[in-house]
Image (cartoon, rainbow, N blue to C red; front, side, top):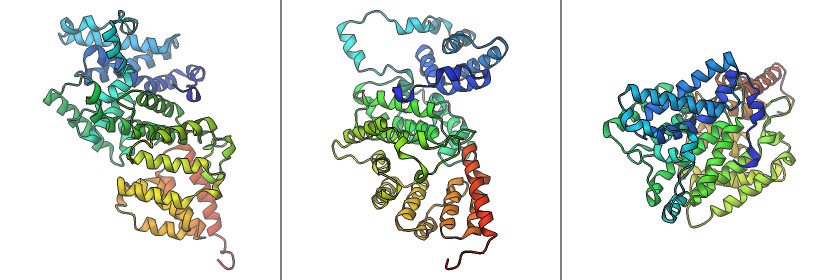
Length: 444
């Protein structure tokens, strides 16, 4: 993991057992599923998922009563392995699998390989989570289903978080997961990890899952914390491993890593010292992480090889324009609008269209932004997203339409599910309500 994002292990270990189990659920799910599937076989997705969940529940019960062990990760791993052994025994599968259920130390300390084996191993993916991301992105599964399966199995996402990422309902995600697992079982898909050129068809799914993992860390979809830096750290770690592997050393992989690094560089100023949300133009840019910006720009340069132009290139380009502007006033909003135009043409999305409207407002004024939102199609998916109403409120506020702004902020506050965003919207609503009770200034 990059030093810039080393997880706060001491602080995490000092947390109450319930918070610590949640922390390990987020951090250990991918590694645990990866280790279990190596041991019980990649066709046993359901078993690995059930065993990992039960291990976490046992940790919650045992740690709450007897205290947290010295090595929580090893404790959870051993419990999961024991549970898997019992499940296989109960299922009369022990004869074929129990010998494979060895300790983590035995797995990670194999005999010295031959020269030929060592050469082949150099092209393997050794990280369990990254390996299983490729396994989940099976070409026989639909693209969205690949990403949903990966987020559920390896990233510790709940169905609610996945639903919000896909702008759909939890019921739809549950149905998709059930269908996908049933398809895997009915078709008897071989969920072994391919090698070499066979990895390439799976790369798009892996990149999409890593992008959504980072996004959930950058702006949590629910809870008291806006930032979950540990999720972003894991996404950056995996993306760094990916671009260092021959299968992942592609322009779009470098572009995604550039996007992550350039976005993460602004983390120190997303919240003030009291945990309140800071808008981009209110942030102290001198506190942005110059090292991450330099690394991100280097990755963006590496992404310029060939003639590939992916969504990640355009998003990283937008992030670079923000990071290289001396201040908010000198931001090249016209160029950012053009990037969003290209992004909409390449991969249409309601969220991209919403972000483009914000850029248009900063380039051509708030009424132009409102006009862009009015033309947004399809808009129905965004009506239940707080951000649409927050943007409408901001643009109406700039136009001194205070009553309209108050209505927008009130709707946004009703839909927001993250503590700092709720606090910010409360302040905006109070401001708009107060202003709407006074006569507008002369000449407005």
